[in-house]
Image (cartoon, rainbow, N blue to C red; front, side):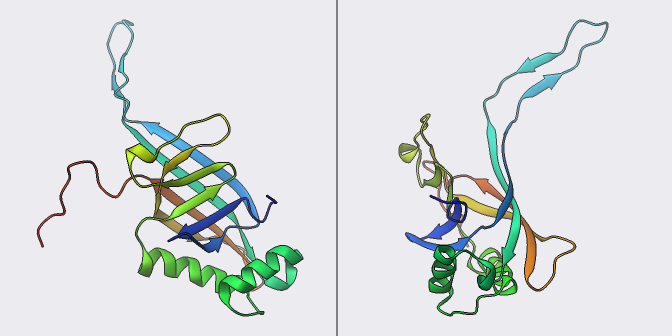
Length: 171
């Protein structure tokens, strides 16, 4: 694995987007804890409800294929089916995935794979985890970008499409 292959988005077993170069990764697990303050210095009440929201935020830049190392240039050219892949094309494809394709995606982030579709698929291990698939929460084009380098920030929420026993609402 190299820096260009560290983080990629997938669907149906195929890579649909590479996040590279990647400048910053933030993984947040936010506990929905109960907190109650008490008067007279008696200490707060804190109850661990163990209800977590798992977020992954990526920040980086898309660059023109001409500015990429050879191995990554070839991978991105195969992905787009053409030789002249621009930073702007990659940005537009990211927007398209978020707004028009949607749904759950697989995200590879180093040794962690966000690809589990059920609780039975979860794996937590020191050498890498298999976590729930991700959905788009927020996509931003960063200020100060230009035609050859487009900065982005993407926030994903990791979770299952539905919980055990849940049914689709009637239309």
